[in-house]
Image (tube, rainbow, N blue to C red; front, side, top):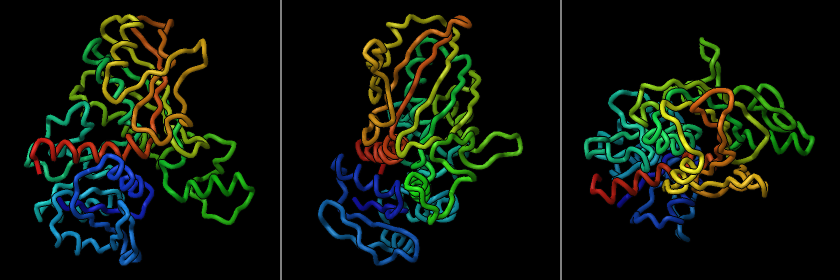
Length: 330
């Protein structure tokens, strides 16, 4: 079982290595891939040294699985080349997510859609994953009508340079490149990614389109506002959900408590609720502040938090790979 990791030296790539090791993924050979300037660098995995190789070298080695975390442009160019060589690609970029012939997978929800013919599999957006993990079981029970989501996204969602910018601003220095149009320390930017022609950001558009594809349900409405906040790791979401059918709060909590991958932290009397500080480094999606919206019927408010580099990216990708192995699809 040869596994190529494209973007091995990047922030998500490093977390993928950690997750592969923690979950004891049964690979026999790791093929780390990065940009040409990183070729020859050494990656340590399970105490063993692996040299970073070029993209073409990795393709020629014909790995069974390639985990991509190197951006959309790289994925568009090289994922089809790996697929043509017989490799199953699991891509973390937005390049393939909304393509009609590509599956967009959160294993707990729709892994059963996968077949041996799926050679390029899309990993959803980080903020989408934590949202649908909670929406899915509630949709099955109450039927979604409308979802309003506002995100509070950490700087790790932008990458290492964004973390460097935040830390430099905290320290009061200006000797790093600015990733954001304004300072992020002591601030909140209502802009995640670039703006499209309709004045929504690309991040907001992902949140408004990906959930419908993952849930296999295009009957509900969804709108989003995505905000970057000065938090190092972990995305938070304030979510307002209107259902077709009425609900009982205790039943909602019970459904979510029994959903694999979801942990309910909802004891406001003791100030217990999800926080990015608590979620960082964990694979679960945490949900709390579960309460009725008294402004209209059949409507629920909640707060969802997850580590965007783990379940929001690396862990979800590795879980897809595990499913492929367990079901002999590679």
